[in-house]
Image: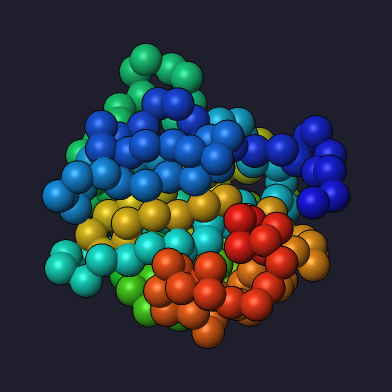
Length: 214
């Protein structure tokens, strides 16, 4: 994979919900155990203005209700006073005004909420969801690379802004996805996985070992 410029390298913060395990050099998050909550995760650095922070849905489990919650915060995860809450809904209160989160079809900022044009519940495995703060203070969401429009305005973009998400309910595992053109290996992998429902069947395919291991 081509090298990503240092200023754009981003990972997931070591401070996260109690049931989250980070792998792949802190670029993948999975919620462990027989539970649907305690899956909060932060980015390890503030987002650049205009940067699109993207998550790829890697695993869903149908026995739970609800799904990924995704947004931004001006709370620094390095600060001991920043809470790692049980679930994003705990932030939908007057005390949660430093958080902007998409949950279902609504974007929440504290106890304020606004209907949005997209439902996060519709995401499937291999779908990619992104969030962006622009230089005029707009909060945008992207689905599979397509800008879905302004979710909220008036974001304090001159402050440090971190990505935050909740691996909640049906959403079991996500990974970071660099906003750019995929490598040939990544494109091949995604295309193969569209046609193989059971990953254990990969060994039976007549493809190079490097692709099976990727």
